[in-house]
Image (cartoon, rainbow, N blue to C red; front, top):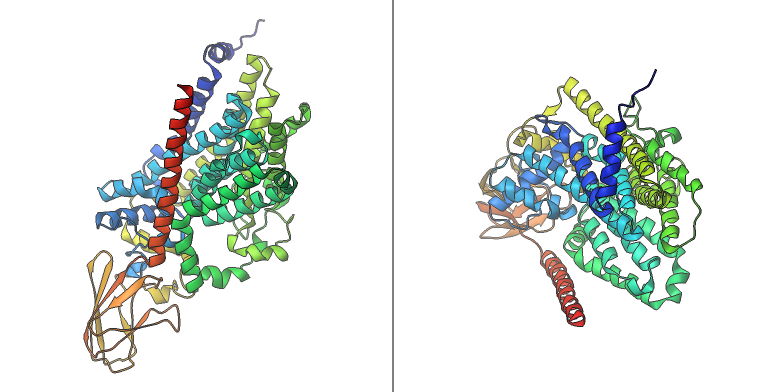
Length: 576
């Protein structure tokens, strides 16, 4: 009996398109289509509750409120924590959320904007990795393979839908540029050596997520250390590396200068608690490093493993011979770094010993981010080399393997999370002020110790003013989005009242008679007026260092744009 191959028409169609459409067009179209299809679950009404989803939705809402009230460079969400306010922008920049904040300011729903952000950033991330891998290898298939391994990876899905860790989710976009920058300076032909990709990558990464920036800097720094002989022999490469560092510092000044000012001037949970954080308790068991199994009943939550598809891709390294070109050496370095980064999430590193010095990263499994990035780039370059001279049918088979192998963790984790949250009745349909109040607790690292205790903050309405003197009165009002006004009376010399705000450097209390801000107990924002009665207006203004940081970043960016313009004109004149 003759058998019928039901897949034959599809195979013939796919092979024909591979032959008819140039790879530089075919693979971007296929990649973009797959990435868009991967966001189909977001079309369902509502959003399943992720670990930090309310926290990050509130960032967009707060940015919109600030813009609507004329505060174009906001550093605080003045409505968070029942009026105590929270310094989002002082520690994690809202730079990339501005387009969505503007849309929030004109009244678009917060949930819609959050979903739009996820889709937009996911597409940009995919084509960021595609461009980097294609640029290094010169092969569009390598770019497609690297991008799909990266964006349909288990950890990318976990960051987006389960953890809702938008800082790390944004960092996915810039890590390929950091890797490309390292390639340009350490491996690329010296005549093509450029400092710009590394500077843009690390500066862009800093505005996404501080912890991801630190981890990527550690790995990049170790790679540079191993290449010190190369740098010392070639002053052009060394100069490019130094220039990249200076440019990155200048471009990121608007983010790191305010951050350093706050951390050096005040005490927060970050620098008070995380030194003693039990980071070793969050190590990942070895077998779970690979298996894409969602959270089961364990003492501490851990993300699913990086994915079996990476194991399959890594084993292909044994099938090819290397000519040890710069691109091939860089490919192998990426694969090694990816594997070691994955092991770093386990007891491979001494998390109970010396590694406790970086306990501020909170979880060893944050190294999944670097493991995914380096393994995806190395794997994509490997697949490009493996299939460089293979027939169309072989490429089609490997495309299907990649789609199925990468698609399984992406779709499985989405389906699992949606099903779990539906059964738990934990679907977010609207975003309210009550959501915003409770969402900030996930951001307690940048709040003074003790300030987020439920008994201290309260659980309803705006927080009251409290006073040393029981016979004195102090009434609080909010005449504007960013202002707090206190009418006080009956105060004796030396009396103080506590202002219902979380104090950050930049706050001012203005009265006609003046007064003193007392931070002897830092979690309390106390003010001692110089009169028995009057009005006190509490306002936040960017410090002089804030303003300087903006000038530094703006001038650095303007200098780069002007340099690019002059270089373009010079090249045009040469061609003419």
